[in-house]
Image (cartoon, rainbow, N blue to C red; front, side):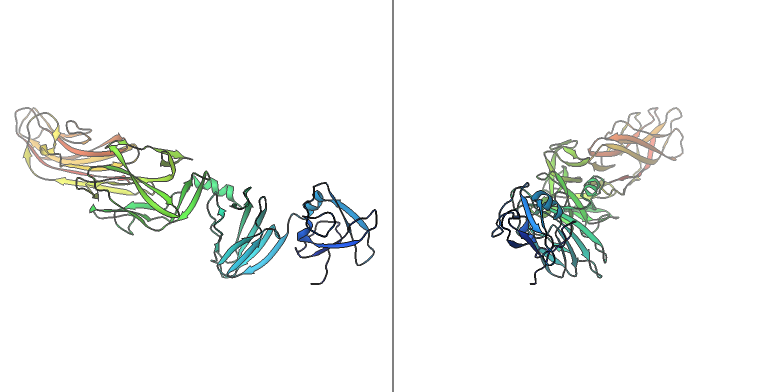
Amino acid sequence: MADTKASGLTENTAPAAEDLIYTIDDPSGTPASRKTTLANLLKFYSGLTEDTTPTSDAVLAYLNDVGGTPAARKMDIADLAVALTEVIDTDSQAAAYDLDWAAYTYVELTLTGDVTITFSNVAAGRSVTLCLIQDGTGGRSITWPGTVDWPNGEPTLQGEAAEVTYVTLFVRADGSTVEGFTANAAAESAKVMAFTPGGRLTLTTGTPVTTSDVTAATTLYYTPYIHDVVRLYNTGDAAWETFQFTERSIAVPATTDTNYDVFLYNNSGTLTLSLTAWTNDTTRATAVTRQNGVLVKSGAADYLYLGTVRTTGSSGEIDDSVTSRFVWNNYNQVERLFSLLDATGHTYDTATWRAWNNSTTHRVKFVIGEARYIQYSINGGAKTSATTGSVGIGPALDATNTADQSISNNEAATVAAGCTAAKAAAAGYHYIQAVERGDGAGGTTSFVYFYIQFTFLG
């Protein structure tokens, strides 16, 4: 190529790496003209016959005007490094780009296709900023080398036509591991805590919210709902990473009447569901704790807590129905309906609360992963032949010998009424039982029907 020069050197310029700079090697003795490429200049200060490692206070002499009337000038290496901190490459690629760490500190790359980036001349302490520009079509992607570690998650490029994404890369002290950050990494990191995982636990593939009863299910799914992105904590890097996910599934364990916490973790690049059994109906064997406010598995912060499920009395099965809500979501909760009706007429005259018709089958059941208030309602009808007593119908949380609220009647005619109760429920398994109380006054108490109906978030 023809010789070119870094002109003037009276101010910072943006020369290309292959541009030649003319120098003199001994301005105070017998000067001789030398030349070197800009890329080699930072490694070089004496002799100019080979690459050396200069000290920051070493003096470099040069000529400022080789083609005109040259005059000797000099500067120290530290000042020269400041003047040459940004070496720029501008390129356009459709398939591949090799990033030369020795040549450039800033690369402006227009993507005309999906581009695979490779590295050359990687060395400890080097850094480069990439300006990645979508072409007029947009939707282009980057495949990064496997040596890049993304503490805040691998970036998703701005995808619209002409949109720009800035990425900065640093080589760690080991000389091979590259740390990568987007230009707004701090903002991205802050968003992690407010970012809701996009899926829901469900018993039906591809259906995040079921509207009909699902019983005897043998597979649990985590399927996209509001979006298909989730963030998991990387314990090695002490940072959150972003993943796009497709539906995940896991077989229901071959147990009966057992609670399980459901977690999602990164299994060597594959997002995987994991189940942890509880000790009993209301006690976890392994606690959940908060990482930056996000619920994770105690002792394994890379396991994101998604919710809690429960097997039924049949081994290896889970129900999600109007009488048994055994799938509880920690995220993206929706209203879930409970409904139970019994119209089997019967009599009971004792003034003591008991299960409706002396049967514990007259209840709705559910599991929750965190403590919360539950509001529940019952309607019913009963009558008594006594003139001095009254009968009662009510709902009871986790009990059969009391009522949390009740309706009563002391008339011989059937009266239909309803009531609502609310109580705090701890994390775990619970039921709401229909209960009844006779008049206790020697009359004949006739119970006609009850109807439980309410909703809760899960």
